[in-house]
Amino acid sequence: LYGAEAAGLTAAQQQQIVRQVHAVGSKAREGSVQVVHARDGDDEKYVAVVGLGSKEDAHNASGRGEVVRTAVANGVRQLCAQNTALRNVTVGPMPCHQASAEGAKLALYKFDGFKTKNSSSSSDGGKDEGVAVTHLASQGSGSGAGSWDTGVVYAEAQNLARDLMNTPANFMTPTIFADRVREELAGIDGVSVSVYDKAWAEAQRMGGLLAVSRGSDEPLRFVEVVYSGGDAGSGVELALVGKGVTYDTGGYSLKPSRYMDMMKGDMGGGATVVSAIRAIAQLRLPINVVATVPLCENMVNGSATKVSDVYTSRAGMTVEVMNTDAEGRIILADALNYTIETHQPRTIVDVATLTGAMVVALGEVYTGVFTPSPRLWGAIEQASSTSDEPVWRMPLHDRWDAMLRSPVADLSNIGNKAEAGACTAAAFLRQFVVDRSRTLPLAEKPTVLRAQNNDESLPRWAHMDIAGPMEASASTGYHQKGLSGRPTRMLVDLARILASDPLP
Image 1 (cartoon, rainbow, N blue to C red):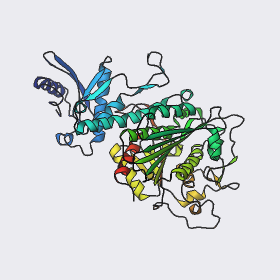
Image 2 (spheres, rainbow, N blue to C red):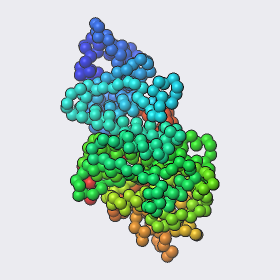
Image 3 (tube, rainbow, N blue to C red):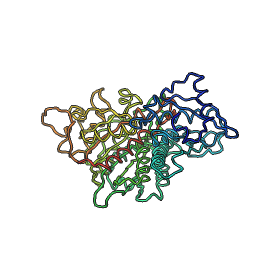
Image 4 (tube, helix red, strand yellow):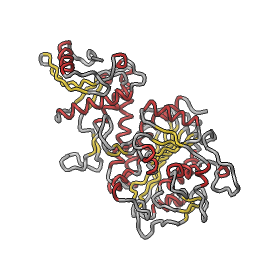
């Protein structure tokens, strides 16, 4: 039994556990769990014995994060399921303390605060079942305690994103979202939060954000979070921009009703970036980071933007709206342009529940990542590996830029063919990141069409389409059915990587 002595189990209790486990033929398969009863005199314990694989694997922390995270989650779930009165769980030593904390805290998350049977019912529907989780290492002051505490910060960040995404849209308007961000980040050293309104957006010439928000009675908001953890003169190393559509009907390009309930989570990009920057600040990472979130609803009324309407973006480019359900890219374009012009980050990453095409391509497992920078892709891939949040690099190409040409404006907000929907969405966003002289849709002369996969010019940019992983369709391991809060932990890891080894 790995860590049995450190967990305070007597020799007699260990023998009882081994006999019970052998009696059912357990092979310690990775992620397996068996709850057993162990008594030595008056010392009585219910113990979840979880499988970590072979003895050699169990003692090897390298690359074992996901196994530990899942195993601990399964153990905590089983203990709670078999004893609904349980209020305290202690997690014994594991090969990876951080993953252990993440698994325990993420597994306990539930979103049922709106059910009247729960006395805790409130507009904050998420909670952790009222079960306190501690770790033997957390009771000391060694590296194990620090790693456990770090894991708690990571997990609580993802749980915050889960809360924001799962909350019904009438309890998570743009105004409420902005107020919640202020509340969650209040009092954290090095953090400032600014919330702007329609008048500010008008002064900033954010024609896209204004165009999308016109159809709703709920006023728009724009949230800007600045964390100053690095040297004052070093500039902003990382900017995170999150899509913040708190409810998306599709506008006049109305969505089908079957999946419209999930559209309360269409601000998942915004939820993950503000949750990530909270964790970054709580961990006091030595890096300067900015997060911006344009917030609005995409609704239908007499003032709503119509198909074929034209607006002028903050970057000065005119855009023909050929699909009002392609609104996320419209508000992100203004936010990207503002963030680059105002903060001049070396790296900027936008995160958005952007396209159904990405769900078709990658399902709910992978985040699709578009970036022309091999170096930035390498950092994202490393963050994916350490957080166990799968990513897949998607292509950028001049041909998709060309598909965005409009006969009446500088750009169309969708491609002119029924193909490559996720790719043309990324191509649209790219127009607002790179220098305009290098973008194809504004050029009338013929050109050789090439892949855009080797560009290290600043700011380095990546677009993460999280339309798939925004949802967990089933409760397994540390995943809870519902809106997932992913990929918050990966964004925190990306900041950690850039803090320790900035891209040249």
